[in-house]
Image (cartoon, rainbow, N blue to C red; front, side, top):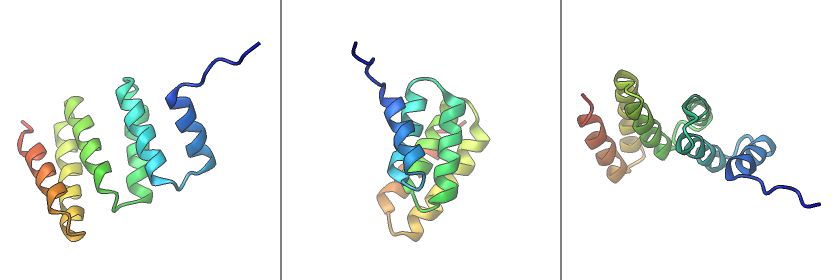
Amino acid sequence: MTQPQKTRRQMLEEFVAANPSDAFARYGLALECAKNGDHDAAREHFRQLLAAHPDYVAGYFQYGQLLARLERTDEARQILTAGIDIARRLGNQHAASEMEAARDELH
């Protein structure tokens, strides 16, 4: 009897459990949770990602977008602003501009 194939999320969860300091895996898991509508898990994975890897610029952008979709506008604005500051400090003007545009679209 064959085992059922694991979902992408299950594979990412296993990888993150085995490699908790892997920023890219945690980021991928957060995105996968968001894509599948598990917003609480996505938010938690983004929080863990940014706590452990505060310079992970893409995390701020995607987390801010998730919060905006959830109509958590103040939180989205805070995350995007933090991301803009990090991106500028790291010399990533493209990411800073993208996050500024996303922040400016918040109501």
